[in-house]
Length: 301
Image 1 (spheres, rainbow, N blue to C red):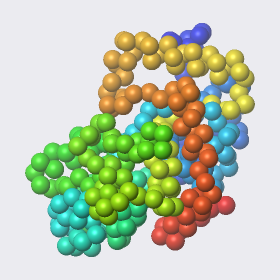
Image 2 (cartoon, one colour; image 1 turned 180 degrees about the vertical axis):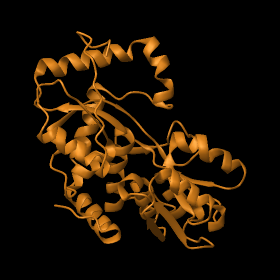
Image 3 (tube, rainbow, N blue to C red; image 1 turned 30 degrees about the vertical axis):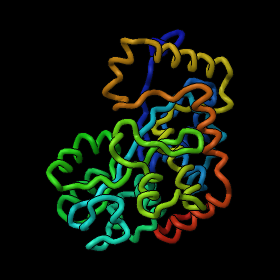
């Protein structure tokens, strides 16, 4: 924390469980709101809050985002499915089966396939995303999605060997437009895949829900947050420290491996992004809640 005034020490407290909901509840309801404690969350956590997932005892407005690092994701298929690109999703040789360790962690693929109107079955219960990737190699499933860095590191080599077929990238929101993942520019976004499959641009509640989720988990990625009612001086000091950090070439060079091909999202751009997530229309929220409760038995308030 050399970039923050006073160079405060850092004590890291890991609180795993329930997709960060346990840590979020603790931070929102038990941690002192004096500006000395921050929370590292994810865009997936914001989705849980937005949908009113049972067990979440906080609101997006309880937090102020200070800095975020975007994160892309790519869905791909095994050649066993008998498809060569997203164009073939509606007519696979074998029934499509998606591995799902936990639905919110795989919501990019679940929503992407739903938007594309592909028929697929989900198999849940895998311990993590790495287990799903291995399950695809064992032909237990034929669909998977991984973060773009993991895809590039572990899946891309199997693409060259014909063991994996990229289908679509989650993409990132620029205004109201979904654009390609800059870390995987050769993979079409869900919007482009829809155009290829159906010949028109996507629209409707499913598409509106997808864009809101992509904004949260893609543009949001990993987020450093503080209580929205923390002292003004504490929030201002942290913002100044973050600005100094981003302007430090030595730090940015050392952070390249952590950023994994993406940059930082701060300031007005970040504030607009978080506001857009929180303003997701009620029709899209209801559509997404119905999908997740019907297909994955998720419960909402």
